[in-house]
Length: 395
Image (cartoon, rainbow, N blue to C red; front, side, top):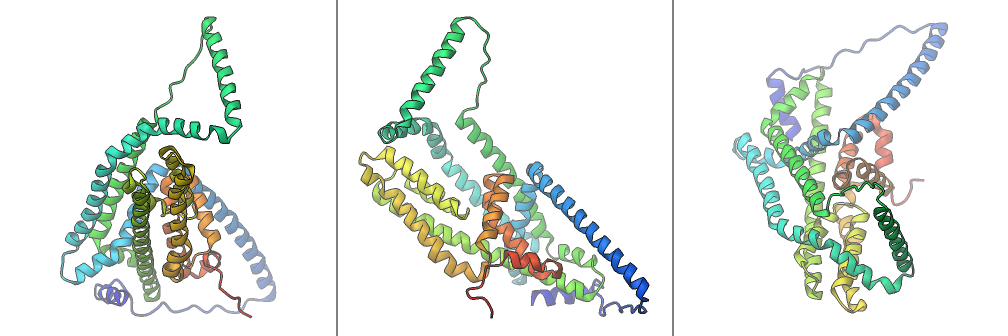
């Protein structure tokens, strides 16, 4: 319905034609000319493959080395695609486009800022206590690992060599490493800048409204191409919006469950564990593993009994497995339709390219690529590779 309304308005403005361009029928070529044409077509196809491979390599290099430039742009576009259906619905209800876009972005940005400020003090405390917790953890696990003593002896030998070098008066070079708290503050500042740029870009895209669609339609000459492009854009918006809203609600439910379980067993900062579980669950496959391992380390340091200390990580693992194996597949299985291999490859690539931010964006970007590939005939092979395997193969 939105696509038809958009095309009707575009036709009224003279942006869309009413008929397709007539097809041109060429005369049948001679056999000799046909053979030469086929050989040239094969040569051109080979050159196109080489050029495509070179472009892909350059794109990968640009993604890796231009992270600071590309990441906020990609995040802003994803935010705009996510909230475009809601903004259009608000505009159809009678609200101005700029007001609807500004309200949406301000609510999202305000919520993010409030969450960051409410957690900043606790996160700083945990970052400052991390070395002490690590020392206590090593002490408690010393009797379980015979290699700890060997590592300790080796470190003492290195210290003796260093002391001997200092006492002999030989010049030495000491490289000061940044502290964990300083590194965390630097990463937090960079993340805040990325979010600010992404929110501003999303605001401008949403405020532009149908002007972006109108400019996009002008680039295509025929009515059929315009219709396909507009339908593709709307389908991408709907897929991205449904996926992100649904997975956010699922992760929020998991965070609440983790908070209640950890509060029941007496884990410190139970609400921080709930928020951490909410964020980690955006990372497929390894999010639950990271949360379980971290919970096990803190629990062993916190509680005296090893048996009681295992309650928290086991609860995290059980709830995370229940969400990953039962809840999410039953809700998102038909909507997502992505193979596990494609999700894993996307996770590995984007984590390598952009770190934690890439791990969080791996599946949304894969959903975006899948939606585009489904609508373009030349990318049907890619769409097939990204799709989940059917339950039973066709005869």
